Length: 401
Image (tube, rainbow, N blue to C red):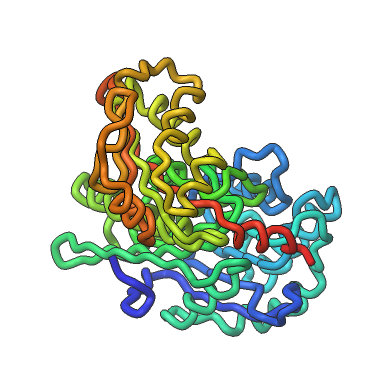
């Protein structure tokens, strides 16, 4: 896994960003990624029924364009959500103008937005900046870094992950960027994720692989339990490496590499969660099914009592046990065990002698493992979550003002 300093840009992509005046701060807020002809794409979107205009337009474009994308246009500072028909019209106007200036089909332009809900999108500001945005395209690290900066909102740092692998004399590259720090919850969040690769793949292949990778990464994390209106994970494959997923060897390596990129981005998003002081890697083990393990994990991760205990590095295992009992899974309390850090703190549903100071120190670290064993089967899940702090409340209490 590479960081931004050692990033290898996948072949077939160029990037740019400008300040369009959407953010009051004057910072970069409009980003473009262009890809070569033949680039295939797949996306997964929020399951929130209140879906933003770009989610609706982007979903329709993928269908109409049969999984082919030539340009990605992203704005931050305005979600273009709950803006009615004018919001759809603004989004379509922008994609139409991008298509015209790049001389590509409108259905091959994919939009995304993030920011405040319920505020009309100033499409005229975006359209006015398109010539500058298009002229500034770079197939370089700098171009991608500018792209990353422009999609951020309350993020404190950019999020990037990159992997490359060789098959014979050829190399396949993947680079992923993301934004997200609040409203982070399975089924995506206020999270925009874009993964670029130069592998050759059909739309159905990238769709299947993206869904698999998302299940093991973005759908196994939570900061605050809120599912956003704009969540999008988009995978683009330019084919410029010359290596195809028709090869079983390439397909297996690409699948592993894609999961690595998605898991890294998911972990970076959680670690940069609004007001987060402690990241918890929650292992729910010995469940009957993975779905059952996920249900227990989500219940623990969303318990305000558990999350505030973690904020204080308080090894209050009773709150975890109580949440397990209330989550709807028919567990036998006498078979449940809980471990914080390296210590068992609850065994067979009752207290187990442990060093409270050591457990407190473990939870005080930036990251700590917590294990819950249900004693029901062999299924398990690893779920990344966080504490809940007063800083989170402060950030979200005055977000729109």
